[in-house]
Length: 583
Image 1 (cartoon, rainbow, N blue to C red):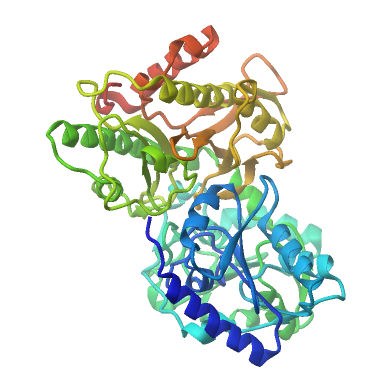
Image 2 (cartoon, rainbow, N blue to C red):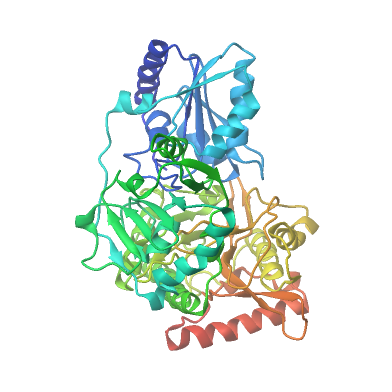
């Protein structure tokens, strides 16, 4: 894992503190996201990565004049601790199920008791909901001071921005034409008494315009902003980057010119969780009335129709085959006596995806060998950590293909081929099989229509709880144009109901610091249960092989063995002759 230079991070913090003193600030909130509220932000643009040295995708920072905290969930406790060692920062662990924004508010509230009265924040990186949460938690004790540009940008300087060509997706792959999607939205606008809805979430913008781009790492989206009206989408984006023809129903305007489409006093819906405070303020400045409302696009985007599911299944099939190729490549190189490191594994995974037609990765390859598998989101494969045949390797990876849907798949496997390693150790087999039982429990579940993510989460955890173990992350997330989308979610605090057409991951795991980790992830959907009206069956959509050398058959039930046999048969059917035999 790459360690930032502690002296450089310390110097950056000192420079920011000088600016804080000049502004009369006692504290400064630094977000992990960007102006589009993206999860994955280019490191060159990330204000949080620059001032902390922490490179994970999620985690907010709070800096005072004498201390600094990095609020991180369970995925990043280990990585965060290592990357901020020797710097002014300390990790503030966030409990499972607690939103980081709430943990951050508690940290700011605690500092207020010690005299922090003026706290700066980034309005162009803070959602309306997060700002309301902060104000509600802090009350009149703390003055929240908007800073645009942020103090980090003033200390660091402006960051370069990638602006790639924007491409069209056929209505067949996108599931519906722009005009068809607008017809579905129109009724919602009328019911809510809205003239328009502001679209700042980039996956929703890509969805409603049937456009995709490569402006950001690990996304298929582009820089822009949209206004959805009853008869058209006003798209504020760089004209020169757009295809020669965009679909009927899309009106392209220059960035910053979108407000001209609004009549004075127009009621404009905003998604409080997906709109920045700065964008809301821009609406007010344009003479419009922002109205908090649920996005009319979120539910549509989450319910994939048959055309979308067909495009996704094809992408998943290609990804399944790539992950099997990767395992064969590792085993082959080790059998030949060649050296392969974690960084080599990540690079080869990306290469094979590109050869399979991928346009890019959907997140940074997680390639963790041995003890490094205990890092839940091991985001920096080590160029010096060579794989040994007996190593248990955790590979979590995904990509985008032409239709612009993310894939996401995790397999844990023994690095060496069967001729080098016949079976895992008893400890490896027990850990793997317990996680497998958890995955099978969720992927074979039948739930009543309207069941929530929290219920499926409990079903998945039950086999691990029975063994006295658990994992410190959610069980699953929605997948679509972004690799992480909602709805749905499968977690200890998800109360959104499943619907037919939802696509989501099931990814339980076990992680033992100093020893290693196991995660098994498949993408799934729910379908009406045959012969059981009012119920839904979970069914997998990804079928990459499982390393049978890590399965302890004695720990399985007959029902689990039967399910695994059916999964293997379905794998052969979906992947066909290209499927690699299991070790």
